[in-house]
Length: 298
Image (cartoon, rainbow, N blue to C red; front, side, top):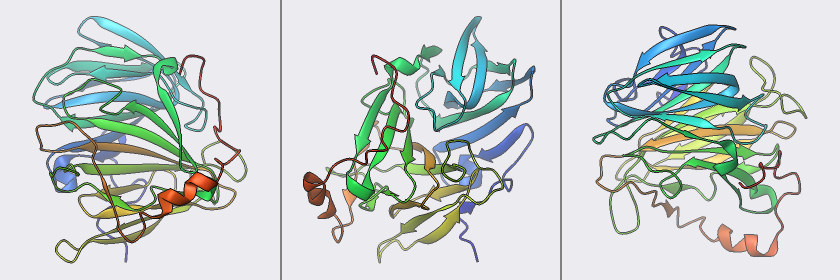
C-alpha cells in the first residue's frame, strides 16, 4: 500500500493543472506546487492569492505577465538541460502564463505575509552547485534559496542526480525551530530521464526511489518508487536518500516553507549517517557532472 504522502502522477490533477498540491490537500499550512501544461498558443489566467509564486519552466518557453509588465522566459527543452530563467509573482497578484510553442511549467508557492514585486531572473544568474562526491554526487540549481533570492517565505531549488547515484543523503530533517534546525514543509516533485538520455520519460521505464522516516516521537514511514510527475510530501522526519536507477538520471524540484519568522534552511543529519560527509574529502565529483554546463556568469 502506498503512503498517503506519495502523490502518483495524474492523481492530483485539477482544473488546468496536471498537479495541484495545496496546504489544504497536503494537510499542512505553507507550501504548494502546481504543474501547468499549455498547448501551443495556450495561456492560463491565474491569481496568487495568499501565496508568493515562482514560475519555473520545466519544458518550453513562456511569457509571464502581471501588473502591466511581461517577462519572456526562454525556458529549456527539459529539466536535464541546466537551470532555467524564472519569474516571481508576489501575493495578491493576478498573473498570466502563456506559451506560443507550448510547454510544462512549475508554479512553486508558499504562504506569504509580505508582498514583493514582480521580478525576472535570467538563467545565467542562477548558482549551480556540485554537491557530494563519488556515487553521492549531484547537481543543485539554487534558484530560489534564501541566500540567493529575496522573498517572504519560499525556498526552492532543483537537484539533478546522475543514474545510479544517491541524493538527499545523508538523510536529514528540518521539522522544528531550534538553534540548528528550521521547521519547513517540503515538496519533492520528480522527473526521470529516458534510458541513457536526457529526454524526460513519462509513462516509460525510468524510475527511482525516495525515503522518508521519522523519530520515535514523530513517526512517519515512506519508501516509494517514483516516476516522472510523481510527488512525495515531507511534513516532518528524516528524508533521503533519493536514488536514481542506473541508466536513468533523476530530477527533483524542492519547494519549502515554514511558519517561522526566519526564512532559512537549517538541517540536522541523521546522526547514524552524518559520517558520510567526511568520506567525500577523498573522492572526486562524478565526472558526468554538470550534465549541462551552466551559462557563462552562473
